[in-house]
Image (cartoon, rainbow, N blue to C red):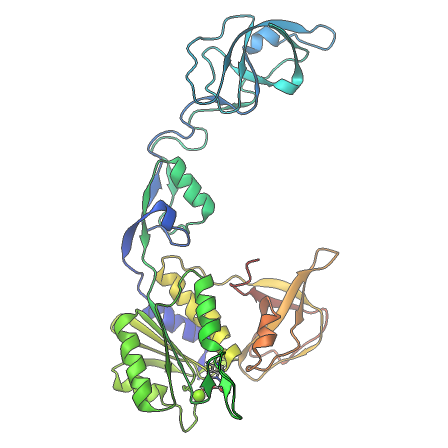
Length: 406
Ligand code: AMP
Ligand code: MG
C-alpha cells in the first residue's frame, strides 16, 4: 500500500496547470494570476495630504511653540479631486483635505486638530517635520515596478490593487470543471423517507459544498447504483464534460464495488489504489489523457478527508497556486490512542487557551461514517503512522480544514 505522501506526490506529478483566460476584474476573485502585474504609472500618482489640515512650509513654523505660537495667513482651500493652481506663498497656509493634491512649495501638512483657526489666521503652536502627513508620488509602487507575481491568489485586496492600477481585466488560470459521481444502491435523496437499509446521500451535498467553498462548484453531480450499467453511464458522461471526476463509494473490496472495473473499461489508467491513511484507505487515483479521476471512499468522513488532503492540493495546482498544506503545532487537551500503521487524520477542534497556547481536542464522534464528528471539527490532527498514542500535554501537528472560514 502506498504511503500518504507518496500518493500525494503521484497525484501532483500528473497535474498540469490549467490554461490561462482573461477575466473581467470583478469576476476574478478566487482565481490565480497567470501574468505578472506591473504598475503602469507611479502609485500614488501625485503628492497629497494624508490628513485634513493645513499645508505649510516647514521653515515658516519651525520656531512655533505653545509659548510663542506662529500665525500664518490662510491663502486658499484645496479639496480632493482638484488641481491647486496657486503655489504656497511664504508665511501662508493652505487648508487641505485628505487626498487633495499638495500645493507647490508646501513641504508638510499640519493636522487640523493641532492648530487654531481664527478667521483668516491660522495659529501653530508646534513645528512641523518636513514630509509630515504627506503621501508621496510613487511611494507605494514606482512606475514599472512589479506589483504582483504570476501565481498570486486573487483576494479582495488584490482586486482593489488591480483597480488602483487601472486594470479592468486580468489573465488568470482557468478553474477545472469537476463532475461528481456518487454511487450506492442504498442511497436516497434527503427528501425521501427511508426504508430499513437505506441511508440518505450526504456525499453529493458535502463534497459539492466543500468544492464550492474552494471556489470550484462542480458542473455535474451524477448518481449511480451498484451495477456496471449505471456506473458506466455516469462515468462516461462525467469524463466527457469534466477535467476532474470525483466519485464517492464503490471503490473498496466489497462484492458490489465496481468503480475500478468500470473505470478500467473506460480506459482510465490506474495510478494507485489504496493509501495507508485513516480514514481513506480505499482511495483510487487514475488518469485518462489530461483528465484526473479520483475514486474516493463512500464513507462520508473518509470522502471529505480524502477530498481535503489528496484532491484539494491537485485542484490548487491546476488553478495555479500549489503550496504544501500548512501544519501548526498544538498542545493536546486529551489522551488519544493512535492507529494502525497508517497516517491518521483525527477530527478535532483547535482554539487558543487563555494563556495564548493553541490547544486541540479530538471531536467525540470519530467514526468514518460520522459526518457529525467532522462538522464539530475545525482541524485534523495529523498523527504519523508510527505514533500509537498521544498524552494530554503532548505537542501534535494539526491542519485547519479549508472550509472553516468564518
Ligand atoms: P462504499 O465506499 O460504497 O463501500 O460505502 C461505504 C459506506 O459509506 C457505506 O456505509 C455507504 O452506505 C456509505 N455511503 C456511500 N455513499 C454515500 C453517500 N453518498 N452518502 C452517505 N453515505 C454514503
Ligand atoms: Mg457502496
